[in-house]
Amino acid sequence: MSDTFTIHAAKTHLSQLIARVEAGEEIIIARGDKPVARLAPLAPAKPKREFGSMAGLVGKLGPEFFDPLPQAELDAWEGKLTDAIGVSLPEEK
Image (cartoon, rainbow, N blue to C red):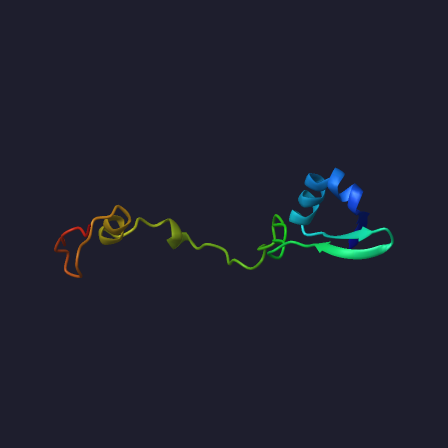
């Protein structure tokens, strides 16, 4: 939805109009009754995140989720590099 403002009103309330544009609105600026400019966001507004929008899309975790990780995987998470047979590799810089 776009609202129309005169040039005088737009100059008076410019920062408020910019905030509305940042929220995704489009503002029309008119000279008298004739529209002459449009304030519009440069990038599309990001949709608001809705709590629970992934409900039902993620399966239930099985009991194996809570099993301890293998040592090689723990080392990888901690930044320790090993090859397939467990030999430590030099760290990359």
